Length: 215
Image 1 (cartoon, rainbow, N blue to C red):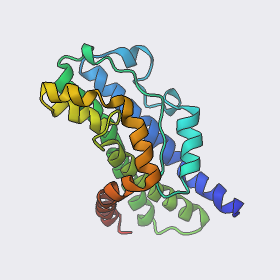
Image 2 (tube, rainbow, N blue to C red; image 1 turned 180 degrees about the horizontal axis):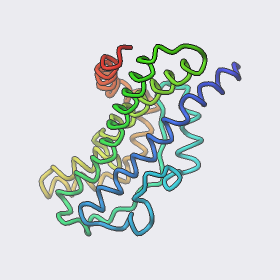
Image 3 (cartoon, rainbow, N blue to C red; image 1 turned 120 degrees about the vertical axis):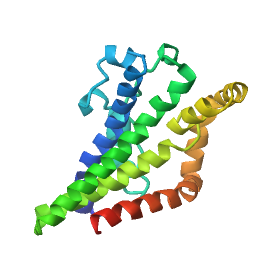
Image 4 (tube, one colour; image 1 turned 90 degrees about the vertical axis):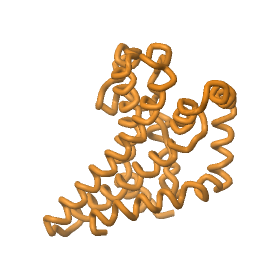
């Protein structure tokens, strides 16, 4: 076992993974407040401080364990949203749900800018290489989380978006599948089926983002 390699991988992924997972939840909190639900605000969750959103298992342990599989996975403390408080619950659910993946895509672009700035310096050495790899990890992690969360399966954000756009009766029928969502997601991950479905989308996004960097 390459202990040094494991430590380096954890160090590279730590910062981008923590920010990707926690600011995803912050996106939900800010969107919910904007559209009329102050539940997260009252609980102090409308914050860009990652410490407000960290779940010890989902934000630390699980990402470390999955960082070596090629499909990083994790979660933060879910932001509580009372959809009945939204000005138009069914419509606004879409925007609250989409805010999380949107935050990840914004962070992916931010890491692109970091990488471009680093390359523009023409730097070299261990520190330079380390931060280039951190920026690369930030792009990959955020694209992965954005695409994963947009998968149309409850309780993922994509499932919420689908419920928002489906007609009333279909939306209600689909929402009844939510208790089975996580077991289905785990089966899809373990079997590799999820990567088969989402891999091409992630690959296309990464290719376009890398073209901006010049990797």
